[in-house]
Amino acid sequence: MRRRNQRAIVWVALGLLVAALSVVAAGCGGGGDGEASTEIEGLGSSLEEIREKAREEGEVNLVIWPGYAVLTDEFTAATGCKVNTKDGASSDDMIALLQSGAYDGGSFSGNATVRLMATGDVAPINTEFITNWDDIQEGIKNQDYNSLDGQAYGVPHGRGPNYLMFRTDVVPEDTNSWGVIWEDEELERYKGKISIYDDSIFIADAALWLKATRPELGIDNPYQLTQEQFDAAVELLKKQAPYVGEYWPGDVVKQIQSYTNGDSVVGTTWPYQYVQLTAANVPVKALKPKEGTTGWSDTWMIYSKAAHPNCMYLWMDHMASPEAQATVAEGFGEAPVNLKACDLTKDPNHCDTYHADDETWWEDVYYWTTPQEDCADDDDSTTCMTQADWKAAWTEIRG
Image 1 (tube, one colour):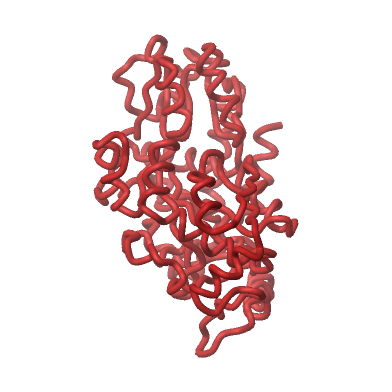
Image 2 (cartoon, helix red, strand yellow; image 1 turned 90 degrees about the vertical axis):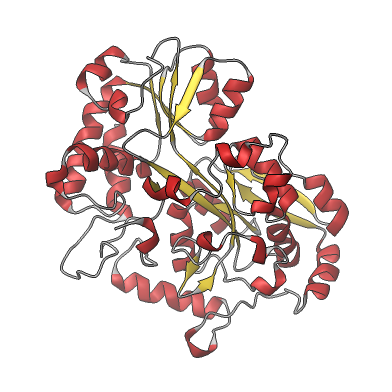
C-alpha cells in the first residue's frame, strides 16, 4: 500500500487506542460532530488576540530536528517571542522531550507524529490562524502523518529522502543501488566503513531492499510487515551488523566527521549532511537509488498543554512563510512545501534539484510512519508487527 493510502494509526493494541483517543477528546475540550476541538488553554480566539497574547508570553520553546529553526531573530522582532530550541537525536527522543512538558511544540517526522496524535500530546490546529496555510501544497495536507479523521494536527514543514551517500574516491561513482550496503560482496569490500542510521525505523530500509529483491515475500509497505516479512528484514540487518562501522545518531556532526576523515565511505544519510560535506569539498555523492528509498515529511505541531500557545501558533505560521521555507530548504537540503519559496532561494535551481513540484519523483519515497498491528489495510485478518516489536528487534540487532 502506498504511503498516501495509509490510515491514521497507533502503535499499541486496540485497548490503548480507545484510551488514547479519549485523551485527545478530553485534552482538547472535545469536539462536536465527531471533530476534535482546536481549543488550547490560553490561546487567543482571533489572530489579532493571538498576536497580542504572544507579546505577553514572550518566548516559545521548541523541540527540533537540527537546522530546522530559521530566521529566529526576525521572528522575535516581529512577534516579541524569543525562540529557545532543543535538538532531538531521534523521533523517540523528541517524543520524550515533548512529553516532559518543557516545550510548546516542535518539528516531528511521521514515525513520531502518528504516536503524538494518538496519545493526545499534540492538539489539532485551527488553520484559519495560519496565514500561509493556503500556500502549502495541497498534496502534503491531510495526510495520515499530519492529520487525524480529516482534522489538521500541524503545519507541514518540508520533505526529503533518506539518501544513499558514498565517497567517490572509494566507491564507484556510478553506484546507484542499495545493494552496496546489503549484498555479501559489497559488505566485505566496505567492512567497517559503512554508516547506518541508528533507529528502529531503519528496519523499513531493509524491508524496502527485500521488496525489490525478494518479491515472494509480498512486501508492499515497508512499515507494515507481517511476521514473516519482519523476520526476513531483521535477519538481513543482523547479517549486515558486523560490517557496520558506525550507527550514526540524530547528532549529524558525528557522521559528517566520519565521512570527512574517511572512517565512513558509504551508507544512509540525510540531505543536510550531504550539503555540509559538499560545502567542505569532501568528495561525496548522494542519491535516491533505483529501488526507491525511505524518507520523511515533517510537521510543526503544538503541545496540547503548551505554556506559550500563542507564540507557538505564530511560529508555525512563520515556518510556513516563503522566506523561512526558502532558508530552511536550502540549509537542510530539502523540498519546501510552500512553493513561493522557490523564488527566494539563493540557488534559483534549488526547487528543481529537490523535486519540490515533481510528484512523480516522490512516488517511490516511503515517508516515515508508525508500524501498526492492523497493517493499515482493509484485511482485518492480517496482523503486522507493532512499534514495540520494531524497537525490541532493533535493540537485539544493535547488541
